[in-house]
Image (cartoon, rainbow, N blue to C red; front, side):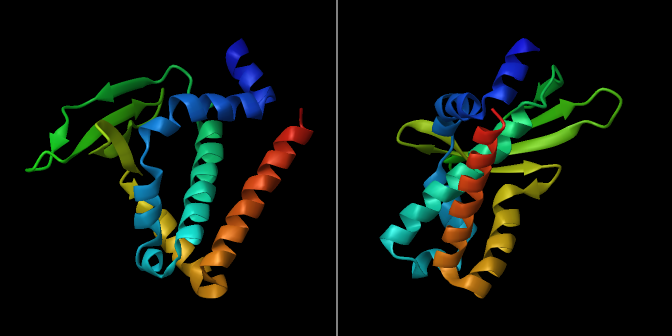
Length: 167
């Protein structure tokens, strides 16, 4: 559609839209803590803050692009599954791709500041948190937490620069 083409041509506008509509529904500090796992405890407050910001930027730019590929697929929502204490829920959906098998997507959510926030997504059984935890742990072992953060910042800024040059 024309809207999709306009967003593809203007990555800043796409990222702003994602920032406005999607980012507030995620608990990035919780996600960052779980992704870093044991390394979170070793990081000082400044490193934690930098990691949260760069991790959020990574997810925004990665998933903003993926959203452009959505094209009127059917999404089926299933009944919410709550934990016994009702402090977290799993929302199960399936995206039906024409001519292929439906892809299950689970959104794990909890209440934060009075709102339900996503803290993990599993696509076809693969958890975003688990995937990044494994990848980042390897990078931390090689370069340390500051090295990981610097690498994320460099990747995020190079993607932003490349997107700006294509305009």
